Length: 356
Image (cartoon, rainbow, N blue to C red; front, side, top):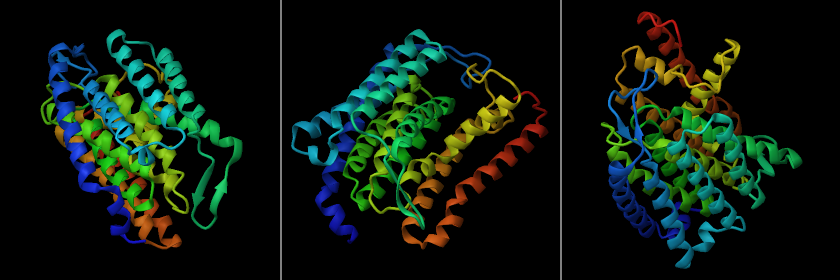
């Protein structure tokens, strides 16, 4: 199978035009939200110093839903709508509604987690469950009943990880955009038409938002943006496990979000060992510590974009190398994160930051 034989039926120019149109639509909604968005007031753990509107993620959600409806009503269902199409969209809308309420009402962590669980179960009930994993050397492995709790955990963890990482202008949105573009490219080459199309739709929404958030934050994504992006990326990751015979399918999204997932995992483990309340708001993530140590916030966001690019290149390398080489290649994102951790620790010590 050649690249041209896969991309030709995808009508790539038309889909890129759709992505551009959705970016414009998203930008219009974001501009409106700048005037009516929920105010986010600064405090000791936040990076901004002036009250700034949030809920800019409404533009991302609106653009994505509009894109889905356009495809649904204009004959492109086969590329976006497997049997679980309705459930996926219902779960996405539910997640967006829950997170928008969180922006407005500032819900407790337990309430958020419970409502996120409902959205995850809606997606799972539609049939979007990891049943098999394509593993190097072992081939396709049926994981049976373990797929259900694994799917729910993955959806919840990625959703909250993206929410936790959304603390600097452009960080979460930039990572999401890069991840979506890599996902669309790889899914198109692997015949994963649902992931290909849906990733382009989400990319369009984020593309319309990003100029208003980076390098200067005129508006923030809010939970409605970060949780929605995290949830959709997790859904794409579950759908990617259906790329038959592709040895990286279950690693695709973890590779792309390696910087996000590592930071959150590292921080949760460190705080648990210190017997801290992991549900309590804090500023101890690696990206927050390095900013407090003096690194420009725009550079921190750009570094995380680089992590996403490294993850995408790692995923592509998996497709192009032998099974034995994939082991070393797969460790590359982890090696990068360990080096980043070492740098952040040393910089924090130099800045006399003891309390993380």
